[in-house]
Image 1 (spheres, rainbow, N blue to C red):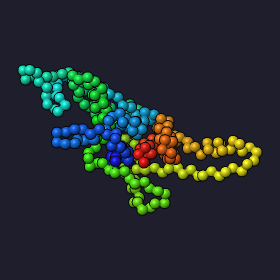
Image 2 (image 1 turned 90 degrees about the vertical axis):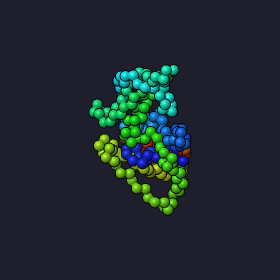
Image 3 (image 1 turned 135 degrees about the horizontal axis):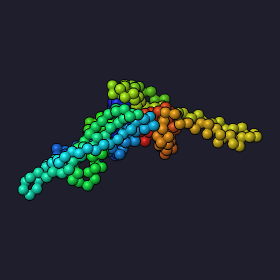
Image 4 (image 1 turned 45 degrees about the horizontal axis):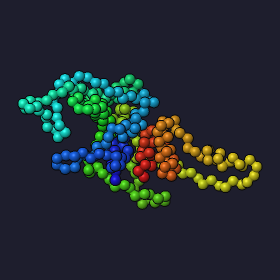
Length: 254
């Protein structure tokens, strides 16, 4: 089972339930949280640094703020007075060639261990979510894995391409396609033995090796090649990082 992003520049990206963390709430099971560390590679694939995108986190003073336990109840001392702690405001910013695109902030008190890291991660999480990469899914977002489609099977409905949202058009980012086509590698014919054919098989194999498109980063291409080799499937046909993100998801979860 899995969840998928429906809209925006990350539409079509899928995540397995095993990669989500369920929160616990008083009234029953909570949301399915998607950790920042797992969303980060997908985010930089759509907003690659090689094209001038950059994410930065700045910190400003937040004064003395009330502290709370995990259930949301305020901490109090023996006299019943609220316990306060120093707070900081963490702001995550996305820019392209120095021009501001999006920004999100969060406040974090510093009374607990690793509070600084929590503040930075929360700010990035809110930034990613504001641009269409959700921080959590709900129970009704879970869908069953699609049945494998065999070649020649035309019983399933055609997939309607995703439409670009206003934010995608404003950012100038192409939406991630819902699917990509795999490259069908023809079966090589056995060479006729003659002079000079000793190196022909290896040369033929190299000529059929898919080459990295200019629009796909080297790291994303390497991840896709490793996933295809691990699954024993042919390399898909992609033209940019957005295509590669969806292809990688389909190979890993297909």
